[in-house]
Image 1: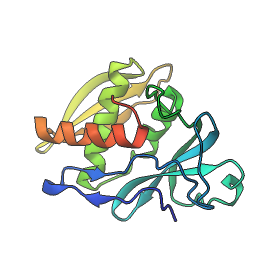
Image 2 (image 1 turned 30 degrees about the horizontal axis):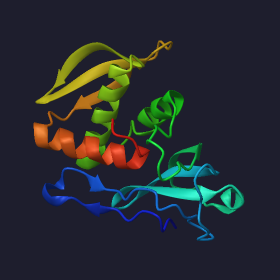
Image 3 (image 1 turned 90 degrees about the vertical axis):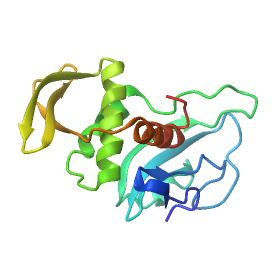
Length: 175
């Protein structure tokens, strides 16, 4: 479905490598020039997450069956400094939509996303409980009362960097 990104397992199983936007529409292959608005989508595939960019003309034809999140953005000019392509609301929605994942790379991805949301003061830590040898954090999104579970996968420094790099590639921003 999405030709602009090709996920592959990284060595060590710590996450997935996702290519950066290629500047072309996934459906019609037309170039998306600098300063042009387009839709970016995060898609769940059997191999993990991949990013797909689609021009606005083709967006209505885009199959959204496996889309985890999507957002309207603007292609940066080649000389333009990178900027974050998604807003805080999209990040919060992505965190919630990943609540039912069970695969270790996706759990790692969700945990690092949670840490980013905590750093931005959009996710609030409430408490920790033990479930056997697992540590589960109770967290809530800012302005909400419902608690969400967050498994702490106890990532080492290398795993944190791999997942951080994955998030940076997906969001096209150095977080």
